Length: 161
Image 1 (tube, rainbow, N blue to C red):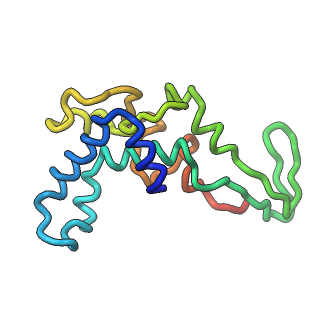
Image 2 (cartoon, rainbow, N blue to C red; image 1 turned 90 degrees about the vertical axis):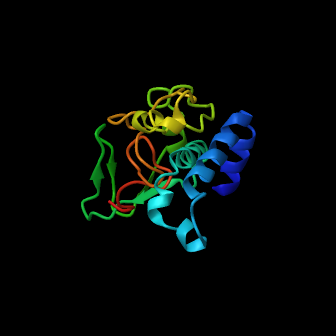
């Protein structure tokens, strides 16, 4: 994940890397020692960094989502297909993550795609890239560890049915 994020970031516009650096200096610059830097409240303020990592995870998912049917009666899909107990099925994560309905310019890396409007309006974010905005109510909003039916880099739901 870290390698993909660094490669995606350095292969994008130079000002993107600079924005991440400025954010880190602003948020972590006042930390007195390593324990202060690991403080969860400080880490939650790294909105641009969080977004850049999340965008890399969207383009390079870590997992393929495989689920095993555990119900003794199996599972009936909406189209009428019956999956028997013990059957495995998978979710097409990459296709969902590259779907233009959910992510405009889905095949392009936009490191700040997931920075919410309220975070963009903060003084340090004025005049910054606003392409592919993520707003509250948009399936793109949330933090790195937030999953939903359009962002499944860590999986979603229970891994057995």
